[in-house]
Image 1 (cartoon, rainbow, N blue to C red):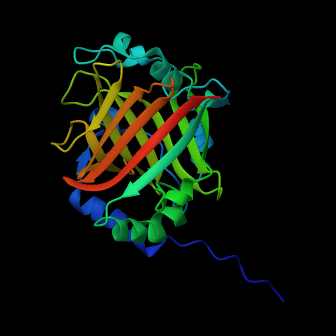
Image 2 (cartoon, one colour):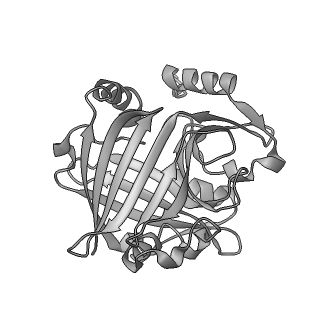
Length: 287
């Protein structure tokens, strides 16, 4: 008896609907203008961590790991007319330049309005894709978070991005899996922090505008606004070298500072339009 041929995996209906709506409501960006939006994408069905080596192969490069790998090669890569990296506390700069050597503890607080929506998204998308899985309850992060930083190098060996892979220590579940680096958006001449979170056949990309705080701290803003500025974008790869991209109404603010004990703290506020969704607080300590 001839065994049945293995079934080909099928994309989830929600993923197909999401890609259709994104194509329908996005703008087509020609390859010559899409450099700031180029980045990794996941396969059709799942995200996980496999995209890192796949992206390295795609650009003809390699990956490397190390306990001192950072999210940015240097904070000085963000220098511009609106931001002076020399005014940032050295401990905050050290975190960005050597994040692999830092331990993270996390607390979360959802607004009562947004919690049901977040729970729905987590159940239907985040947990299934193993991506962008925000903790829904404070006890979800009671054991802390593990993280690893993997550098992606191009053919010449230069670092083109840092994959920051974070999992919950209690459950082993992936929370975030994104590529960090710097980009300059078309509407500004100040470099921004760009984080690309791979999704099936595309990505969620967040461009964060840096600014100095008076106490040596660092602000990172991803505001609402027009296309081509800092903010959040859904991006789909086109088959002809183009991308389809649209802004989404998510605004984020990170405030990094050093507390009285010498620990780096981060307050992270996420809003949908101007509606508060979730507040996260990180304590960062060098291992």
